[in-house]
Image (cartoon, rainbow, N blue to C red; front, top):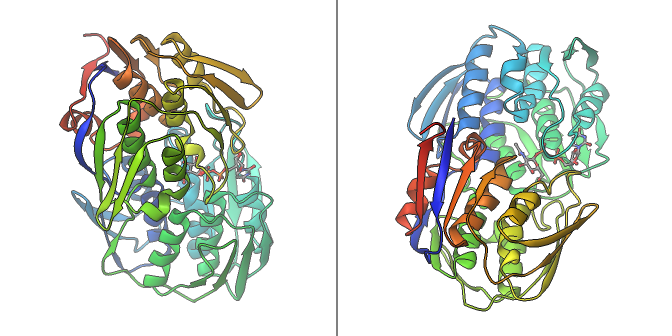
Length: 420
Ligand code: UD1
């Protein structure tokens, strides 16, 4: 198993190109199950989760030609309707095949994702929505099995604006008979990217980007000729935070600043200079960075996927900050590791109270999930001395060419085999 060694203390400077968004690529690739035509998709990032969905789609019967970031996918016939435990356990987003498989082939069997490091993460909203559209659902032996004749359009209210539930139901409704309305839908830009891909293939979806999405079902959808995955707003946010925490100066090329409004607002509030231009965003850190209070919320609120990175940043600010995590129940596990590096953070329930310290010191630390790992990378870059992060596979799920990108910016980040 690999680990990452970081020699901290360098001010990061230069330019980095943002990759395609993991959380948009996964649902768009799952959506290729809906049509028999050829789908040409570009800007697909080279990540472990993307490889997992490729294995899953191939297992189900898709033919995939991957030429770097450009993929051609064709799903002519179903070979298998089952997403096995081995694939789902490494990536919860495998549940995204439920909606398209049920809608097009009338059956799906997916291993139930268990809890994960950040909380219980049930899929009840995905299942309740599909049931409302007429699917029969059975849960046994750790699998959810779904059968349906043609799904029927329905009015679905989501108790929580779940991102993947919205995506699953939107894909299912694309081939349903009649109109589906999803209320309290997620408004994340990745949901919009998926809706735009589906519409490009002939779906009739409107209202995406708002909390009421209306889908007029169609009999079939075609292939998309060329669809580019949106830039990864969380990767971009992580590099912006790297500029701030190392008091450096980084231009993130290719990101969409409008997807990052809540993050940019907080960076400006604490004293980071932000420059926006049509090609990207520049962040310039200053010696004195102030505190902030942050509450994570569904989009357009402050993203839970940026909470851990801000925890590292605010650990090194002047004054006291408060971060409240409201989206997931157990997403503060990185705090214990930050404390080992000298951070002064207290946790009360889902709230972290951070007293800024003058310095962090490098230490061996362990990553518990994807964004917690990113937090430790940022802390390591800013800390005095060496930090070694184990369980690097978490980072490989979501950050493309991480060592190379940070090294190009002047960071000393190297990957090593765990035993070396
Ligand atoms: C997606 C993102 C993830 C991000 C999260 C929140 C992908 C592949 N992943 O995850 O990076 O952190 O959105 O922005 O896009 N919930 C239920 N029942 C359900 C579904 C969700 O109770 O059926 C709860 C969850 O436990 C959580 C909250 O809803 O507390 C939000 O989760 P959700 O939006 O579903 O997250 P994901 O779609 O899994």
